[in-house]
Image 1 (cartoon, rainbow, N blue to C red):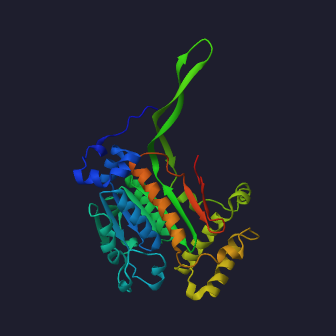
Image 2: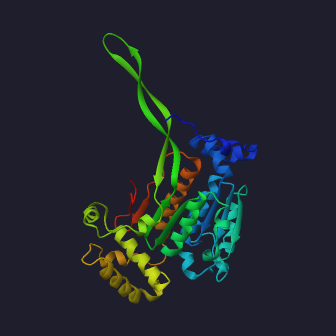
Image 3: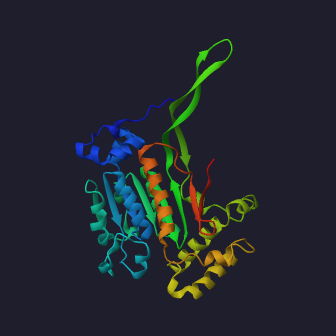
Length: 337
């Protein structure tokens, strides 16, 4: 399909200061993409280490505004990877404590904090944003927010990191983007040999992304999927166990109660996934949020948000998993046709 996308988002003009500040990334993804970023309004819910990493990358990209939402206070555990909160902010609200350093990253982005609980937010609140990114929530809450966002046409990403394991799920509804299709064009046709040159043709694609319910309905014990585990590893199984732990115990595994929580995790694994390949070693890698894993997963999530806003290249479809045992990420198409 020849590119014929809505240009209303790019009607905004960048100031001279913005052109100078964003010069390098304009050279990377183009002026029109930077204009789209300039109008984007992003919500980041959950200002743990992962939330801080996503926040940093999104702010530096040059969006219009970022809302930081978190009703929790800063704890000692946050200092493992949450670099936006200073040490003296212990026991204060995480979103508000992150504001000063976040604003210093890019004064041209409007950054604000909200300390109300996520569960109290309604469709009127989520409708203010172009992309909603949520981490640290239960499956029930993620499904509620995704349902609201799909009704409003707002893009939704669920993500999390436990220790050195992380994931994200992209619920983008019907998403349009442009990619360059490489073709070979005949430039000379002599009697002996044809000569070609490579041309790049911008082409619009339209792809449907299932909702978060597709992940909740996914059967990780299905025989056809279990055959894939030998190639990709047990990351998806580990995600199922961790989310079940959060739903059951209303918290995440804690390093303070490591041995007791490992026993609980093994029990959940054996209940959900009897005789699975998910070993005890993997369960020991999921305490706190470790900086390298946060950097990888947060970088990927921010990259996907930028893809969504700029409409350049295809966002991953639709579940990304970072495996701590292989230190590699992979993508699974869950519920996608």
